[in-house]
Length: 345
Image 1 (cartoon, helix red, strand yellow):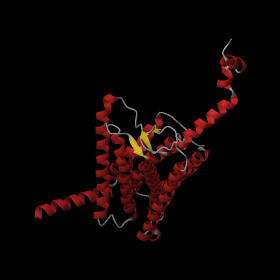
Image 2: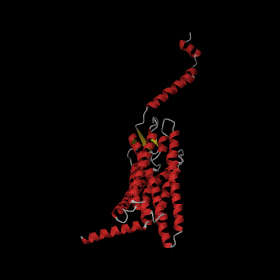
Image 3: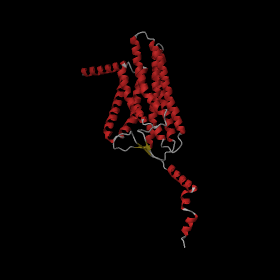
Image 4: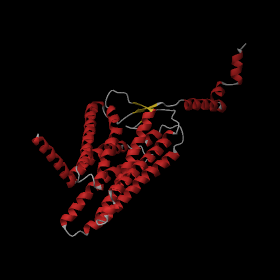
């Protein structure tokens, strides 16, 4: 007499229990619901890939870059503020604001990057990731608008020299700068809201060195098509539009400079504009490369991101100090004044 269970197996083979479509669909639904019920409360930043043997060296390199960035931009900021010939001119007001932005943008990214080369935990709270993404896009977009304002200022100074004091006075410059800050804040809020309205229920490892939109969206448990479209339009196209406006301004500027009779006048005009154009190029080109290719997973992406988040804020004060004769003269006057004060004491 065969056991009753044997007859059951003969009537309902074991494979029916394990492969029946209804049973599989039920299991999948239960698994999915369990996954969606799991809410991510923090992220782990994997950081820059690097061999362990270079950890100490990379720590020192990025630490020195951060210190030099803060000191260089602070020097420009104090020079513009202390020199009476500079802090009343729109061009240098904008330069001071740029230095202030670079100091904060570097502080949002680099200290957290430095921690990746230490034994400290790589975990970041959910709120910390939201804040980092918001402030990065807030400060970064404000910087984009500011570069456009700086190009407009140079266009008026060279192409409309007689009307420049009326068209670009201190009051208008303040209003334009305030508008750039407000627009940047709105941009950062939109991007952070759209990114973190999505559910995050699965893996929490961000394969990047900071919380940025493309890296975070890969972890979302929902369709990210709308977010990717907004990223392409709102970041990529805005950056590209600002860049095109800057290039258009400089096309007009070059045409006006070529009409200057004296070689010395042309040299001074090109020197003034060259600093700004160099800074714009090293900032905009990497940004456009990154955000117009939001779905890309190229190994170059992180190297490009390091350039415009870490290196560019360091280069700005160097470029403006070495290429701008008025800033160098102001630094000499401040240094000479400090020496004279010490000698009088």
